[in-house]
Length: 68
Image (cartoon, rainbow, N blue to C red; front, side):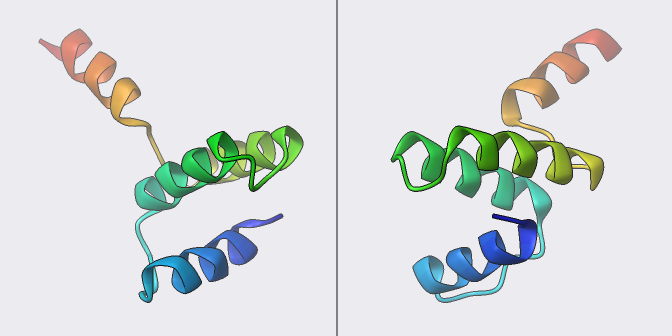
């Protein structure tokens, strides 16, 4: 699965196109937890989305804490 496939899956599930990479990362995580995508696909999607600037909420929290 690639980002385009994930975006199409998001469109089918949510009836809207998603341009926010963080929302796609959350959607990929949910799909992985629900066993809808494989671990290999999930890891690749995470790498690709992070390369586009996606951050998990936990990572944002850590980054914010380090800046204070």
